[in-house]
Image 1 (cartoon, helix red, strand yellow):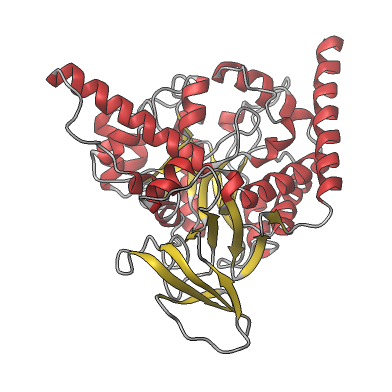
Image 2: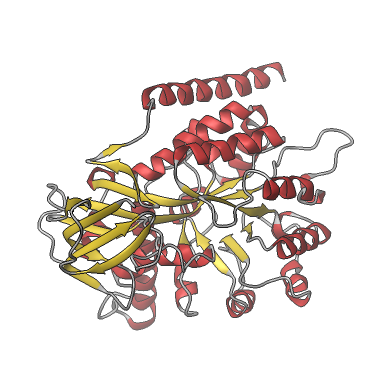
Length: 454
């Protein structure tokens, strides 16, 4: 069995029982972590990695990203949410071919690995045909990332005689096809979840159907909450009354949730995925990070849209932390006339949002999210001898507040190296980048041609 020992590194385990090790070792056998402690003795056939000048952390978990938009990087940077609905979902999304979905998902997932993400929640809601869906799943599998493929549904403007997307139940046959086909293994590298409309974007009948199906099939049901008036006012209360809201429900954004409803959701164990940078850019509202923390729960963090912003999860966590500290400081000034005596959120909290909390949201906290013996060997090595990180006074602060893509030296997923010595271990990257660029150009040309024809 393959063995790898990372020796004499600073280890941030995110496991409360193990804690942080100023100088510690991490031993991996096969696809699992087997020991985390100082001075581990190993057999001579073990690969030894010198961890001096390095910090080892659990692999990051990106809780929400529409990876199919990778080929449109930056194209929507100046759009509000209303423009995004009109120009992306009712526009560009309609000219995607399966090959566009495949290369965008593949390259987007590879970039996540490069940035230190080992688990990606791919919220795919541009799959009008099974071929589009299969192309996305294939891209995830080929990338080697650990992923939860959240199967969604397109949102075009209806043609004459067609129902509005809000009136269309999630396609059970397609979900069952995935569960008996490429995503049959519930513990596989790529697993299935549902990206449904929810009561904010669907009729109550559709929301009831979708949540019942998710519950029956034992799948996480994730849905956007926010972005204009709800399609079904009072829908959440009816879903709660029906017993359909619990730990298998994931809310994305949630900026406009009233306090009483948020209280009920928290009490029922609902998870929340915040995408702080995009929520502020597009007009969703302030992230609900602080509102959750005050209720004793933590958010997970997602990138959301590379068509608007960068895919670096460290930056997303930093923005969430900074934004909430700013709100807390402003509130303290308003109510007490001065800023708080000490910070309201320590940096370790932000690291939890992109590691242990992501694992909990996916129901996989026993498998990923921390450097714990017995868990899958998903980890990141950060080179803290780099110019922008020296000197290290507080390793957690260095990771959260100063680490960037440039410092990600190595990434391991399931015991296999995916990045080493600062280089992504993926074949044919130049060809893949060119295919992505060709796809992006064609998509823009096609939608602009349609606009001229109209």
